[in-house]
Amino acid sequence: MKRCLFGLAILAASTHADEFTITADVPYVTPPADVHQAERCKLDISSPTGARDLPVLVFFHGGGLTGGAKHFPEMDRAGLVVVTAGYRLLKPEVAWPAPAEDAAAAVAWVFKNIQGFGGDPKRIFVSGHSAGGYLCAIVGMDARWLKPHGKSNLDLAGIIPVSAQVTTHFAVKKTLGDTGEQYRPLITPEAPLYHCAAKLPPVCLITGDRKIEFPCRVEENELMAISLRTLKHPRTEFHELPGKDHSTVAPAAAPFVRQFIATVTQPR
Image (cartoon, rainbow, N blue to C red):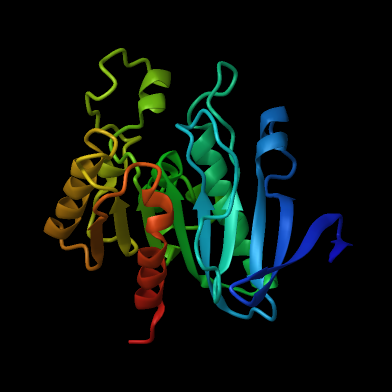
């Protein structure tokens, strides 16, 4: 079934015997600053039929900040409102911090509008895979990105990076003029690790198996988990998934994402 509402594409879908409404290609920056923002800064929303005050998961795709496109994570979406957002990619004509600005704008749009799609603005989790995990971590941990939108990163219910680079991202290092080796770690203000603190939303770090993951990816996420715990952050999880590489960790992470959301949102 297909119909049109306010110029947006609305599709009815069936997943795990639950009915979902998919609202596609919603612009979250109006007016866009440039042609790249107009093309890339759109999001899709998956809402269970009859959704009301459900937890919300905002998901950012991977692709090294230079490729990829928005897509829903491979997971059971029952009982969740799931939002997937595109963002500007780094190109000669698009520089850092455009992806972080866009990711923050998408999250801010969700805070403002998600109640109309059955989501609870007080239970918004940010997640992403690879470069998308980097973006969710930097927006969730560094207050400067949401501040221009009148929101605080502390308003988020949780941060769930999947196989994210938590040192300064490879592509960001290049835009900052770094000419060192790719795997030489930098921890600049553009690194999620730089922003470790006790006062942050709950954090769930998920990686693949260190034997077959991206080099250093598991170890730097483990360092983040240890750093957060040392700083007395109240809720930090770290999961290394045996037998999963950088690609296969994304769908394998789904049960851990669901469990983390359930644990954080359950009444105390």
